[in-house]
Length: 313
Image (cartoon, rainbow, N blue to C red; front, side, top):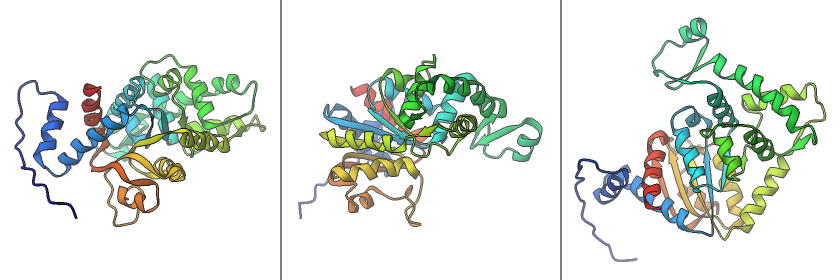
């Protein structure tokens, strides 16, 4: 057992024009519950980004793409903080929809029956998504793209399809556009679980030879993991995207850097709520990895971490 190191708790001193990074560093000295975790997580992401041999992975659920946090994720790709994205189908839906139309701010307590019957609006938390900004927009723009994409081959992986769509966009604010431009593959294991996948299914009705090569995605992930000297991941939420990251990580002995951003509890055995220590028991995260679980809404924690890291690199 090592000797106990006593580090004094310091008060946070807010000053005029204080930067996000200065605030994070102050929070790191404050010993303030989740504030301390957020500061530590920022330090870990900084180390991961500065490790030139590290394969940097980002996974997240679709919901945050409906918010302004989309801009943070796009900037992370543009500035080289991400080498690989694993996400859900809705990420494609929201990114494409917002490239062609607007989403709007709402409230958690709005009348949902009124939104549906009077305005034909879907509510995603406190974000409003009009019907004409979602499925209709995707159908009008994706099906012509599919004609071009599948003209020469009718079997592609999810990351190949997504890259081909990104290549046909002209929107600097689009995640798919920036991932294509910066050669960051986007893998969606549950590709049919959303509007983008539904458009593929609709296209399949008239093109029965169409195939989605999921094994091709897995082959790429296997090769990327095996080739990496070290691996690190910022994992937002849970679900299939989180599990795909840690699943493939176990075959190379686990992640070397790992950040979980979650609002879920672990008492019900959910993947979203599982802490990093549980992944250590599976060999999905190394016992000596630089790691931290941060409880809190990722639309707050992820922008804070990014703001701290980008100012340091």
